[in-house]
Image 1 (cartoon, rainbow, N blue to C red):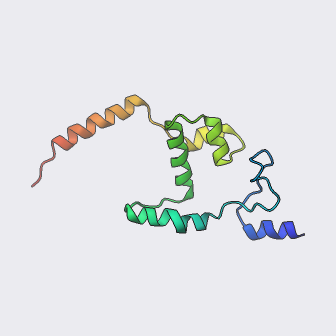
Image 2 (tube, helix red, strand yellow; image 1 turned 90 degrees about the vertical axis):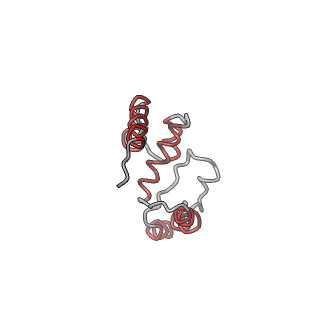
Length: 119
């Protein structure tokens, strides 16, 4: 009965799969307090750099994309995001642009910035 109460009280927090690190699989682990993280780290950093906050899902997509660009394997990104299936991670979270597209956009940006007319 107490376990059900705790799960309801935690709201969106999910139980940690036993295959994770032993410290995370302990009976008393409650999951990350994302509101606390946002208050302590994300909001001050965002305000200091004048960045807009697009929500946790955008944060997770950005994290997945940046990890991919750093060469982290898809299965590792899947574990970090706690997805059951790597296809979910690849299809919906890892957003990459081809090198050709990035190069074309840089050339376009250089051309545009060099032709700006101030009136």
